[in-house]
Image 1 (cartoon, rainbow, N blue to C red):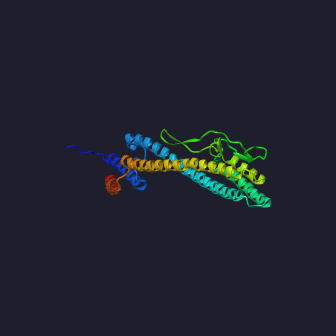
Image 2: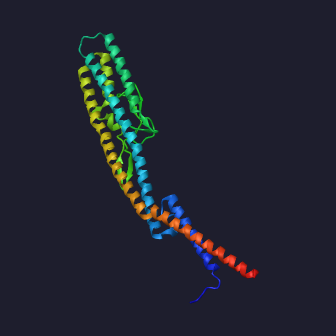
Image 3: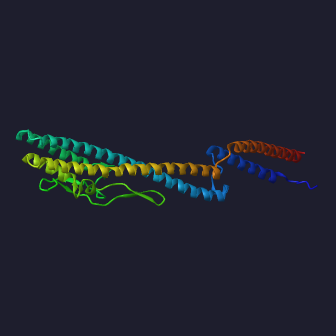
Length: 294
């Protein structure tokens, strides 16, 4: 049997190793991760990088959808308010057309209709987080009042549709331009409303103008369904992305999650081993000093 005449280097190496193991166990306990640096597990570390990228993309999509849901909700409630205003205008139109009102009464109704027209224009210019909801992709308020126009307004937006990516290769349209909602040929809300104001003032052709506004309002209601459908799509995608996040989290735990029970056991063992190594080193040093003195 060979006896090592100078075990101190081995003891110091053992002490260093136990200290490293102790530090690693402490790090695993504090972070909850078994892979804290690539050298801990190069294969798992590479997979975790890819996994973290997926988590980042998923989180970004969820953030985009959250903003879109606010946009959809605002657009839907705005169109509901416009519909209420148009119903009020129709009620006034029916009242004006019953043939019993004086010109003064008709003028009063015309003024109320003009006020409704301004209200609808204001609602059609609604913005959300700096985006005009009904301007297409134009960065400007889509409507301005213009008494010289047959519609009573001018449209300054465009006919484009915004698309937003809410998943890997998954895009959805997020708006309907005002030109389609309010100014569609044959169902022009502003034209019908402006005509109703004019015929009430002139006390002629009121029933036909009421019917035209009713048709335009019904058309607008069918177009408004877009926002409910878009919201449903976004909600469905949110559910899918949340499920994906859970799976990503589970994969992260499987790849780099620490077993805290094992880590605690390793820490305790490393501390015990370190104490034993220190005791052996102290004893070796004491014996060598005794030999030197004698």
